[in-house]
Length: 233
Image (cartoon, rainbow, N blue to C red; front, side):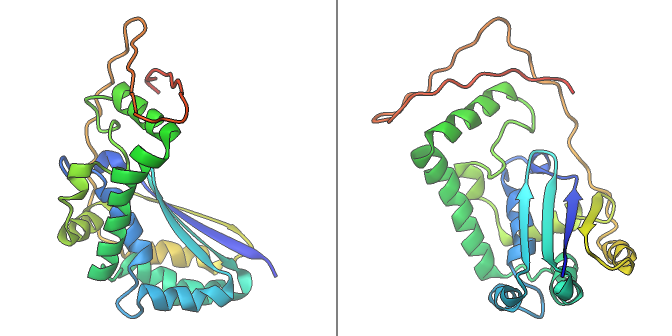
């Protein structure tokens, strides 16, 4: 049998993080797919979909949050009706899952990006310099300070304000039944009717000549040069 993939794109990436709560969009997206529903815990969902070879994931970029759900056609309807629909409309926002996901996010910001991945650290520092003064500058995962300030209530409010029927794009591909297209439209039409307010974007300052920043790290195993400039596209 075939396979089908559902992809949902919400236009509300990390640029929509409130000041001081950088990383909130990433955490909210992860909570939607990984905190269970009002009926099933996240553990119960993982156990349920494993034999179906079904998968789901969330990914947050600067301008968009993306959800991907895929399953063999044989189990697609079951996967959608028992899991996907409820995750989108009624995520549990469980406190234990919140603590777990926030801990992982804080660990990435505080330890992984600074201690374990010199190459990524250089790239992220370059991003920060290039887009300084704009909502594009910070890590999608946030900062040490901001991840320490995010609460479960922040996540719930962000979900209702930013993950709405008015900023979602639906994609579906593969071997799926035709009625599923209308089903997706109808179900996503039941998300909050809020009109998300995205930040006003100011154009980053173009460097004059060559600007060099050196990030030194004691005991580093190698060196890297990252270079770039902002483009107004």
